[in-house]
Image 1 (tube, rainbow, N blue to C red):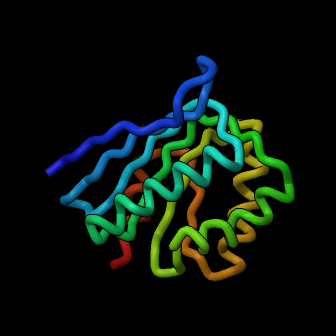
Image 2: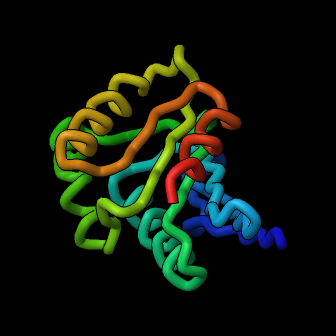
Image 3: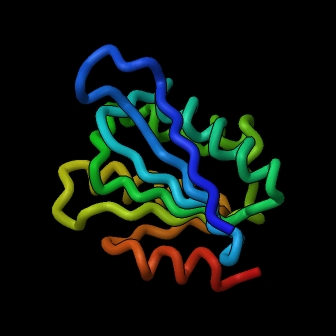
Length: 141
């Protein structure tokens, strides 16, 4: 069964942060497609909503397709993100993959977060394509 929901903060500009959530029941996976400019506040709002959706369905595998996202985070906000996610309920038993284009201007921010998250034993993977990200996220149960 495939369920899709659309969520976003109220748009204030054409490039405002927005996301769609697709539940892939057969894979026990939540696929989130993002676009627009994300600040720390909009990112944590999205992460809270996605986490709640996973809890409702008892799903712990997530893929974020961030190929159309533009992060507007400071280095200190990225550094604090693992703590913020733990406060929202994200935990080490979850597998989270992010898909970003390899030539993205924000790739360094993702790599920095990846180092922080994996250093704290979170299962967090970075990918340039969607299919390998999905395969990695559902591989371990």
